[in-house]
Amino acid sequence: MVYYLSLDGVDDYVVTPTFSYDKIVIDFMTNGRPANFSKLFAVNSDYVQHNSSGTDSYSSAGISSVKLNGVTVTNTTDFIPDSVRSTVEAIRSITTAYPTFIFRNYISGGFLKGNLYGAQFYLGSTLIASYDFTAGNVNDISGNGRHATLTGGTWVVDSSSGSSGSVAYATKQRVYTTSSSLLSTKQIVSRSSSAAYASKQCIYQSGLSAQATRQAISFTSVSSLATKQMIGAISTLQVASKQIIRHIGADPQSIKQVIYHTGSVSYASLQAITDDGVPGNVPFKSKQVIYGASSSSHKTKQSIFTIGEVIYPLKQIIFDSALRIVGRTPLKASRVLSIPLIASRSNIRLLASRSTQLMLKGGLSVTEKNQNFTMFAGDTENIPVTFTDNRSPVNLSGATVQWSMKRVNAATNILEKDTVSGVTITDEAAGVFTVLLSPEDTENLNGTYSHKAKVIDAAGNVSTVMTGKVTIVKS
Image (tube, rainbow, N blue to C red; front, side, top):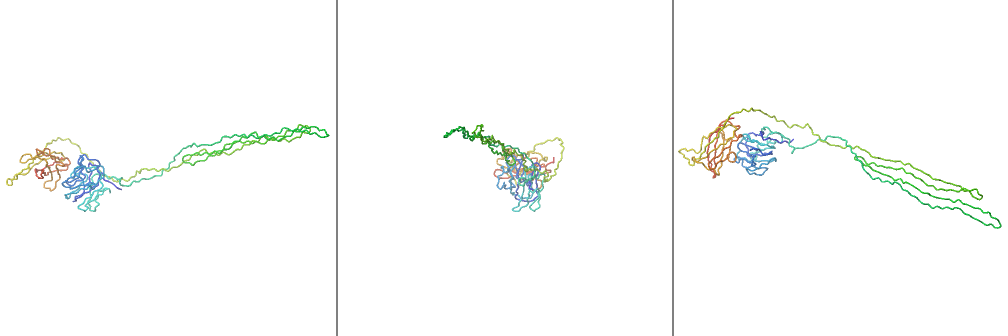
């Protein structure tokens, strides 16, 4: 199963052990532009950050170049896309060993919201550490045993790169269908015919013969002639009626219907007229057939319709409620009672100066020393500094200012500000610049620290103009 690590941008982050490297590659995706300066990663004072203003940046003092998806980007431009999976490669110019914070500032704060898929660290061409977050853990898979530590975070199954499946459960369901079809019916109702036949009739014949020397007695002879007459013939023809009615889900059923028919047959009528009893008359037989009627009953076969049930196989996907639980992350919570206190604050103003002439024997100070102040951890402080040359204001047009803080006698700075981020030249002509300390800069600090400021003028000349101590009190 493939995962990704979702970090909420509030207090989730990943941190590596302390080791040296000169290249870092991070596979990630941000979820929306942050409300402040959110770090993609931070190592000591070096970082790549996703800014709320729409201008992303990296610390050029310790990072020489940054590539997004293999293409070199320009500093202080919008080069980190939102909601798009991307790869950032950063080259470090300083390889001092420090732990690396991913999706968080080095000291505190600066959390970034998004997803992590992987991270690799190189020293030259050698792979120092490698983390595959799609495996669901933060272990070092390079074989060097540099396992990372996860604070918070949620392991999410990555449906975009995994495989999906469905389980088909056999479901039988009967679905009834009703249909009726209007089909043409062809039927011959009746046919009448009448045929005229020739009627030939001989009524009678008379004959008289004279006999020589004899006396003839006359007689009348009537011959019965056959009378043949056909009155008419009426017939009804049987016509086959075939009808097909269809319905959904059933085979067509043939319908065969035969209607009764009646037939009558006319027969020849032969009639002889009887003799009248007169001598000489010849009797003839009389034969008469009046008519013959017949009717035939035929079988009627009729199929009206057929209702059929058709079982259609239905496939239905039922979600399986017994899904595997990926993992559980224990959460800790605490409650702090709010106690109202009365407090006050005052602005801290410091002085800085520069001498254009160095008196070797006189020991003339080059910088303003002992510029000390005290503050509470986690406070926001705007510290104005007035820069003078022999007590005269120095015009800061075209100049840049760098300010740093470290523990007393330590070799490494824990906090750095410059005119790109954290230092503002508020009055060029009067030589005034302001150092901004945000809550996340000091909220985890306590004790005494040393600080100093440098001014680089337009010609590139560097002057250390101020030193002093900062006492941070835990609030």
